Length: 534
Image 1 (cartoon, rainbow, N blue to C red):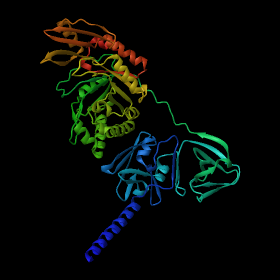
Image 2 (tube, helix red, strand yellow):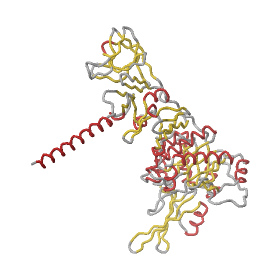
Image 3 (cartoon, helix red, strand yellow):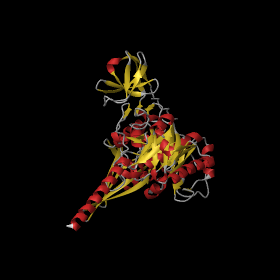
Image 4 (cartoon, one colour):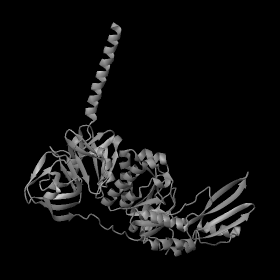
């Protein structure tokens, strides 16, 4: 019996201890605001987007981004927050005690807080430094973010209540004819408002009358870039003996593929040639150096997810461009993990901010939207469109292997353009066309269809079609000349890239008022194709 009592006492003691621990943890974790309001004009926000800690209010980064209030990127593992504002890259570095913002030292709690693996920004800090249309009342625990407000005056002496949910709510006094500002939020018969002293609360609708409506217009028409024709020049080794070459009159910009991403202190393999640069620029053409990621998704992920290395890569690109005297930069990162979409966007944003400072043109290559995560879906086309001078749509490689088809049918290209224009202004879009085609060979092996694909330059394709005796006719479906022939049991098929398909592509440029056209690649073309491009 004695043992049973002892056992019961032990169990009760354990339960009491666990209960106390639970209560303490609940108190520590219960930082979500219980009596506060956040109002964002036409906004999207949830209860847990607000946080109250030590009487300070915070708004989640997710909420800020979802409502396009600020363009942010958080490198959580490096205690670094990047803010892209007015095409400047502003960083906040922090530890448990202090945070640095524009060379000023703050207490970390006065800038941000990390809670439940979510980043929150101090509301007062946001109001004072980053969001002009934000109003914060730390007494009533109310926050307003809006560019639209209606000016009212009080008909009689009334009160501005902190909250609408309690009859015992604290309040501010409003005198007759006092001016204040009303927002588009009504609860029962009370309206959200702010007085001229910055106090925020709710006022009875019957006690006020309209005065003036104020609406701030923030939209500005994007500036249209200079119309251009550019061509990549495929270079994947050092030029030992430079020889001058003819550059078609239609070309404004050459973009040699000189730089490949590597994991060392130089960050890029360099195939550049000083004589090449000097010669191109002496002809009146511009040179954009192309920087690619070697199409290596593992390497790209490793480097871009390291906040410090990502910034160093940006600095390296700028350094190379300035030292070599290039007119611009072309970024061609492909085969990137979908999970790295945000860090790739942060890389482009940081690079463009520095390009603007250095007056360097930035172009970024994008693929036609598809279901491929690593070749298409990783691209945030809206962010790239905002943080670049030109967006080059690589409108080719619709079919690469496995299934015979066009390199880029006209309907598919038009779909790609229309989709891109949903995110990017037409004054930035360059339509890049292929100066190559593919020979498809279909055969049966062990009762299975085997498809082989061979890429051909325009000139090579012309010769091969003659040799094989393949006759072409216009295919309305693809907007191209098509031909096929059975040779020794193999079905040879070609959707040809020639003046006909090029002319149809140029009609798309005109139809959608695109700013320019591009070519892959310079040494793939023929004189007739270059003339057609004009």
